Length: 190
Image (cartoon, rainbow, N blue to C red; front, side, top):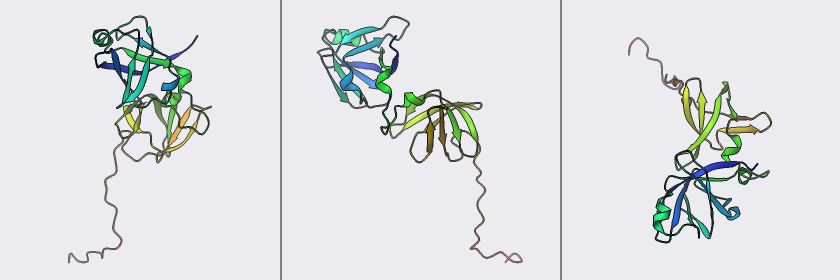
């Protein structure tokens, strides 16, 4: 049975022809050319609906899709809030390619000097970078998923190894000023 992954949401109707503006969690869609149909699920429990795709293009942090199965703006507006699902096979990177975040969902996060700190539960973005949402004993934290922090990914062990600055996981930051060895010692209160 084919598995699907939710990667976006219908934000609004676009234009008068019944186009959909769909925002994407990752903001990009390298798989868009492979997508032949829209699989949308309602915001309340219910069955997914599948729509043919006449045209699709990247737009802002998502995409604009026109389907011959959606007749006009009113039908498009009725789909506002529905989630877009794509086959999970679309989100598997090849060796040497940038990974899809979904590939490391539920991986353990190991931090240099601290060991295992939690589990990557889902993802977010601050528009500048992708964020890993990590569940720890202390709560959930968003960690920038940037090259400077990533030391390695072990797919077999399902571990992401990172070197993080203090404070990103809610721990107190040592703000004691470092002594400046270049200053002369204050002698006898002078």
